[in-house]
Length: 112
Image (cartoon, rainbow, N blue to C red; front, top):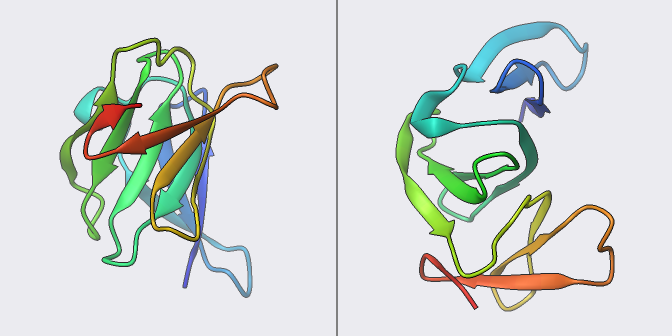
């Protein structure tokens, strides 16, 4: 599996060969789907990519080919999302910078 890196300044998600580090290109192109200052990345079991859009105050979902699928979570105080991870229960969780103890569950496209 390639290595995926969020590129905060280019508003994209970049792809590298995991064994050599050779750049393979943009997996999510600049600004696709409203991507604005990406931070955290997480893949679900179906290969979809979730990206926290820090300045967009939302979490965006992309299909396994890097094409925009939909805004997965937004609103209800979701401001400056950063880290993303799936918990053992399969729910996507987010974290805000400078609030390392404050974690948020994101479920069915809602911030709960």
